Amino acid sequence: MQTFRISLSDGTRKFHTVIQAPDSASAHIKATYFFDTSKWRILNVSLTGAGAVAA
Image (cartoon, rainbow, N blue to C red; front, side, top):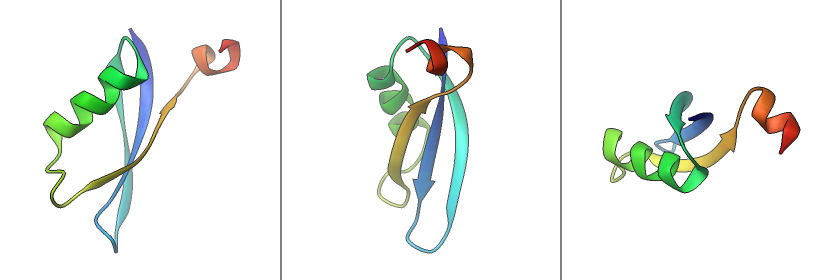
């Protein structure tokens, strides 16, 4: 598992969270599942930690 930083916004507010997933596509799917995408738009999914340096 890798750790991904997810950036979300509702148009006026913006926040970040982390999700563990095997790849970025899976992280995006998990974020879609956990957050109401009719309200929160996923802005970015990026790999964090040591894996990001090696990638």
